[in-house]
Structure formats: C-alpha cells, structure tokens
Image (cartoon, rainbow, N blue to C red; front, side, top):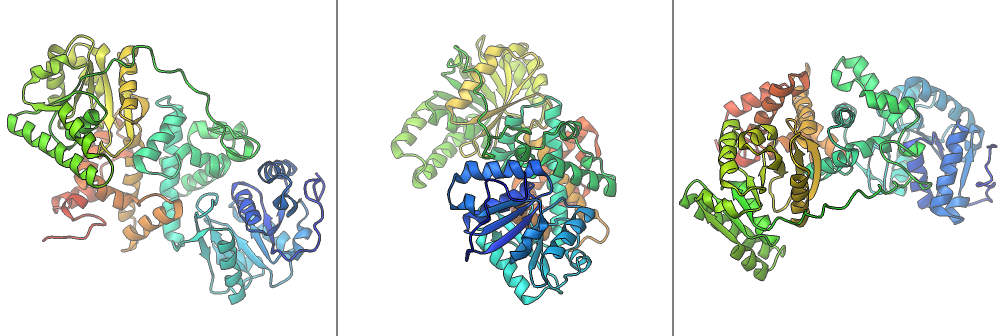
Length: 591
C-alpha cells in the first residue's frame, strides 16, 4: 500500500472537519466509523500495511462507494496529519508506543492542534508534558471499543487550554458517544475487575466446561451484560487484553490476572478477535460477526413432557410452577403441608394477576394457567408426571433424601430435575437410584421473568433425558445453556470471583471511603453493565452471596473463591442487602 490507497484518492477541498486517527486497532477503527458517519474527513494512519488494507476493505464493505468512502485517507505517513484540527492517538497502551506515536504527531502538526490520547492506564498529564504540548493534549478514556451511544470519559488536565477542552467535547458529541465521569482510580479498579472476569471465562472454555456461545449467552442473560465475556475479548482484541492482563499480573502478583493458556495460544496463533477476522467468533469483511452453524435439531422424542411436577413451595418453586402452567402444562405443586400448598397456589394467582395488570398476559390466559395448576401435600401426585423438578432448600442432605423418594415415587422414564444453583447434581442422581433420568435445570429468580436456564448434565444422564429437558425449557420460552456438573455452573463460577475481587478492594490499604459508590459507577458507566458489583451483591442478597462463596471455596480452595470477611461481618450486623433495606448500597430503612 502506498501513502494513499486506491480506495482513498486525494480529496478536494472540503469544509467538513478533518480529524486524524493514529492507530487502527479496535479503538481506532471504531472511532473511524463513528466519525465518518458524522461527516468528518478522516486521515487514518497506521504503520502496518496489512492493518491499513484490512480497515480500508471494511470501510468499503460497510459504506460502498458513498461519501464516507471518499472521506477517508488511509496512509502510513504521519505528515498527512498536518491539516487535521484534531488528532486522536489510539496505538497500543504502553508508554513507549504512546511516546513514539505522539512524537510523530507533534512533528507533523503545528501547535494549537488538539491532540487526544486514548490511554486507559497512563497519566495524561505526563504524556502531555512528554509530548511538549501540555496545552494541546487531553485524553479520551474508552473502556471498550466505542459504539454509537456508548460511554467515553473526556480526561482534561489542568494544563489544557480552553480551546482544547472544547474541541474534545465536540469530538465526543460528533462521534455520538455518551460522556461519563469516572476518574482514573475507579477506572483502573473497574478495568481490573472486568479483565479478571474475562480471563476466567477463557479458562472455563479451555476446560471444556461449556461452549463459547453458552458462556456468553449465560452471562448476557444471567447478569444482563451488554455482551458476553468472550465476545467482549474479541472486540477489545485478544492481544490487547493479553497485554493488559500481563501488566496486572506483573504489578500485583495476583494469579487471577495470569493470562489463560488458551488466550496465550490464540494470540500466538494470530487469532486476535474481530480485528484479525477470527477469535472466539468468526467475522466477515465488514467486521460483523458471522452466524454460527446451526446445530442438530431436537431429538424425535424430545416433545414428551406433558404433565409437570414441582416439589417445593418457596419463591423458586412457585415461579417454576407458574411458568409451566402458563406454557400449557398440567402442573402439580407438592408442598410439605396443605397450608403451604394453598399459600403457594394463592401466591401464583397473585403473581399472574400482577402480570395481567402490567400487560404481560391476559385475564383469559391467567384463568387458563390457574386451571392447569394444582397444589397438594401428597407426594403420590407426582407419580403421573413426565418431568418433576425439585425446588427446595439448598441443603445437600435434604436434596438427597428427596431424590431417594422421587426415585421410588415417580414413573419409570420420568425426568427428575434439581433446580440447585450450586450443589452437586451427580449426588442427587446417585441418591435417586436412577441416574439416567436425572438432570439439573437451574432457573434464575424470578423464574417468570428471567429467560436463562442452566441445563446441567451429569456423566450418567441419558441422551433422552437431556433431550426432554432441553425441549421442555424451549417450550417455556427459556434459553438453555448447557454445562457439565460442577459447583457454580457457568454464571456463579464466573460471577462470584468477580464479586469477591470487588469486596477485596475494601481491605486495600488506603482505600477511599467512596470506593463502593465510585467502583459501581465505573463498572456501570464505563463498561455499560446494568449495575456495579456492590449493588449486585445487595440485589442477590448478602447472605446468599456468602453462602455461594463458601460452597465455591469448599469445592475449589483457591484464593479467588475465598469467602469475604466483610460479608460475614455485615451479616452479623444484620445487613442482608435489598431484601431488608440494609446493604452495601442500600440505605438503612430501620434501626
């Protein structure tokens, strides 16, 4: 490729803003598309001819021969930046790479040109001083490659001129980004927390525990993430994430940041994610993710679930019974007493009434669902069910005892499912005496609302059992992700080390008293997560969170699973989170 590619002829004089971008990795390329869409002429600079050619092809594939295609100059010559009013530096986030790029930019651009660094880890003030342009250089902190409406933090320094600040704000507005205020400390903490989560997801994949698609789907639907962790790594660039993890590992010694072996192998093989056309997913000429090949359809006998049984009367049991009855299944709920059975039936009726008021269902559908649902205290009512779900307390011995009973009471071939969130499905299967029929079907609370179900297979579950369970979940309108039987399954095994790492920040020497609020804000606003880790702990329940931490630690005995002393102390003080109005982010409502 020459200084100006055949796809980017020398433009005629234009009145459109001229913006330079140096470095066409994931961040630079994303900014290029945003600014082209805003009508800017962009001088796109990279020292790698292959990168220039790839991004030029993508621009052509996306924009065709339209005006955007004509409004970009691809080049390896920094001298062509001279006419730019703003130049964005988006090279690798190392001091050496930034210093070299900025020296080339300042050699080409006269004083007064607004210079914007995208560093996420280095001091913007120090870069501005080192570049010899303290009044001209500001920062734009991007936690992931920018997308329309996505978050971006303008980083101003005390040295920056007013005109420079105004130009930065205008750039953010033109790109269609949402300005956020996070701060360097909280940004660093949030980035470390999220990188640890992303790294653990690669470990989970490498262990063969679940597919890349199921890991991503589980975290999107189970935690509300804007993108799955492996998809996020592809967007960031696997080499970029690998370098950031290596830096954190060297600085902290925390094994959570040691890059997953699979991540290292992929980087070595040139599988860098979206920017290289392949990573955990494959990408086409436009950079769009290619659809996965369709898997095999459901087995022929997978529609054999008609009558459903639910054992339990708590919130989860009631929610599952409601969903099953609403989906057309004759459903029986078995409680420990007639009083509990009646109360459960009344609770389901009230829940469906609320759904009618909110427009989620109709009065007729509510009546039909309630007509299909019966509640009793007689275990014999489960004998005619095709699928029975146990939804009682998370106590191993209680579950084993019930599965011994279910193994005797339920019809031969009936699927026996546990809704456990963290206990052994295999132990339930062994207790039943019929391990071919047992599977884990972990619903998320509240079951009528949450779309995700974790389908947990044991080594002994029959293919027919899995097919029936899979088809049953599909018929409920749920999305099932599959994994093998291990404590925490997919969501909790990835989520709770992340939450534990956030809690560990409270014990860091010199921790700021606003750390909880600022960390939550950084994760929420920077990475577009629905809430930060501390607010999420309150939502889950501090008691539930500590119990899950303890189960994970009992199984794995690793530092990242160690139960939090802070959680234990909060529980001792009567803090349970949102459920009692007293938590890490929940204001006390009673004393």
